[in-house]
Image 1: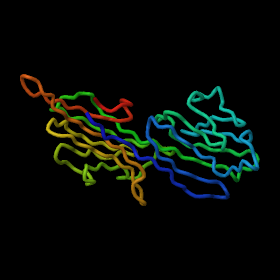
Image 2: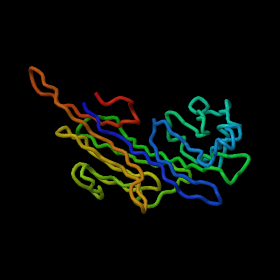
Image 3: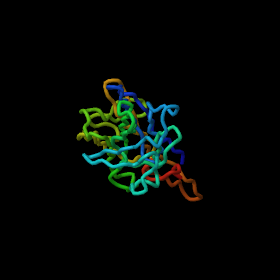
Image 4: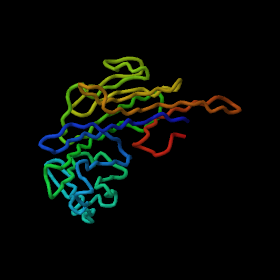
Length: 240
């Protein structure tokens, strides 16, 4: 089988307030993420003057203290600090979404706030029976956990938005930061469904979910098999 499932990742500057930088970062599970510490000049300071603070659900923790990864941090094994004081997180999951602050202890006006948002797709069933329907859930994990109505949308291979009910799909609506689409496994051909997170400026990130079909030729008959492919959620390698 060939697999055409991928995520687009973007970082957007949100502005500077009182010298403090604010950035929005959109990513996918399984990626290695770079969180920039943008206003630190290495000619003026050292990373020993830097803390990295993580905030989520009204809880905060220190991932980096005085330029060193906190060994007591539950995520210490996946964190590392670069020579420019930026923070990397390896193999992220939805649980890593939240606010990260590069805290410059000598000058708080040079702090950098990074909001890490993570888009995921999951399905309700692993059943590959071509007569079965499965429901796809597309979720954006955010620091504030709030999404505008219709900010998560489903489109087909041609980019047409999938609303209501149509050929092989039924749109299930959006509840806060999760959108639902029920689809049918089809053995005749492959289909690709794309979930996009959009705001007033356009698409911020999108995730693709594909059904892949193939025909296995034998000496007796042709056997057709069909399965779903989800690139980052279920396997690191292409379907096959």
